[in-house]
Length: 52
Image (cartoon, rainbow, N blue to C red; front, side, top):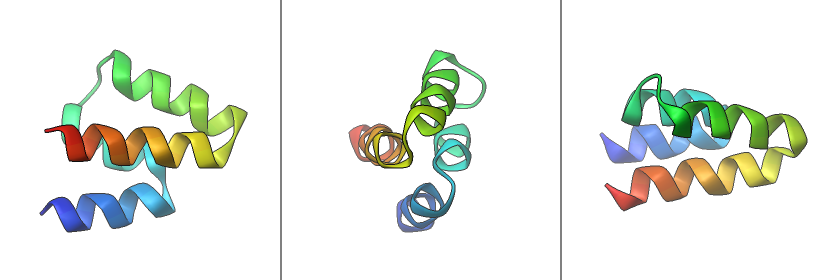
């Protein structure tokens, strides 16, 4: 299941984070990072998924 989340995180970072943690501060932080730059959003999403 983590592989699917990582693939989704590469395509759409907030979706991968949402599937991992739901509507929390990490989700909204990832939206902000994705808006500011796509790569920081991906890095944050993969980090959140790999951490758990």
